[in-house]
Image (cartoon, one colour):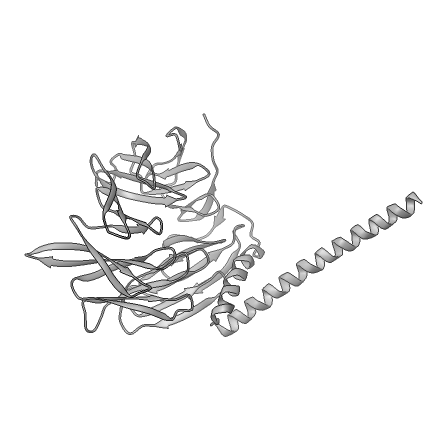
Length: 391
């Protein structure tokens, strides 16, 4: 009797395994067919676009590679950005997407003179600076392709995959058009005073911040305009004493302005200053932000001079600052570590400011990128940086 029960249990277990295997095979087939359909059509309807983006992220895991390091020719690399489960590496000829295990998902030959990318969680916008070509991609295909009427000055894609495109204008100093998830124009803001340099969207796409420069009395004037995208109305402007290097929406109610010598938080609703963090000497060299933290390095503009490395909360409260006798040009926050790439060494700090590791790097090192941990890109490979043990 015991043998019969055991046999039945084995049979039931075998059937369940068979069902799971068939289910996995069906899922892979569906993903594959959807990917093929995406490649053939090139354009999704809105509902299919959501499905396509979701499946393209899952599809990236199927591209099995040999892991990291990944050897290649990265001499002409321009940018590297995380796009969900895919790593986007842009050079002067191609945009290459890698899977988490280092497999090549796709290589897109862009034929652009001055290519630039901006990435979100599931899409990237690729555009040709000072030209009219713009493309939106997910991990498996080009979802949308546009030829605009005016030359592109800047493009940004937010977490909700809405796109803001800053262009020249035939009747104004410049204009910014915000596109929906399906790349339909939602609103256009025309800049009547000043020349718009770049524009950034909040995560939900409801607010737009645009930097415009103008001359007044022979002096350069920098102004940040905040626009309500839903209502298509300009809310207010902030006149800046110095040139804003970047604008980041840290929440639905606050945005951060990165200046050469300070960081300042503002209220989205009123434009009022909330708090600021200034540098005691030198100028900003590089910065990065992740999960409520902001890392930055600043110092002299002399290339081989030392740097100050700082970790802040998104409320601009200092966690630690450390002096590094090196020119820190790239930063990454991952695994409760701050990695700082200098011209000679890679420095690893924990969030308490303890230097846990220092390693010599190749003279061909290019940058750090946060992708499933921190990765170092050199001219010849992409390698995984492992967290050192606490000292």
